[in-house]
Image 1 (tube, rainbow, N blue to C red):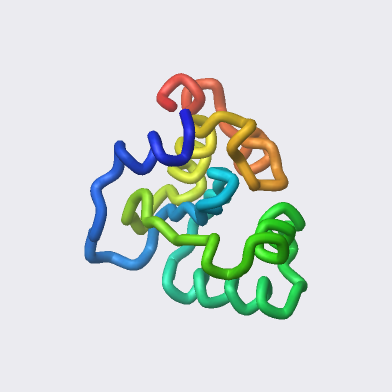
Image 2 (cartoon, rainbow, N blue to C red):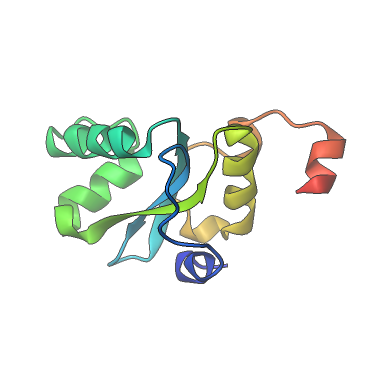
Length: 120
């Protein structure tokens, strides 16, 4: 699944601020998926690190450096206050590996039982 296909499956403009988000590079069509209790604050944090050229995710930083700040856009995939790690892993599993900007493999995001994997 590509990032654009993933965006077609979500419900936009949900009211809560905690949940799972995706930062999409419009030029490369690659995406970083994360989760936060306050997505707005986390987005501001991402932009600050990128602007200072010290973001911990080198793939995201390189995209920002090469294509500029306007190439990155934030999309809320799901608003939720519970099981954020599980929901983040769900979206990472849905996104094809070749389109991910995340440094960690999906299995490193969260250690899951077989029952949880089956649910996903």
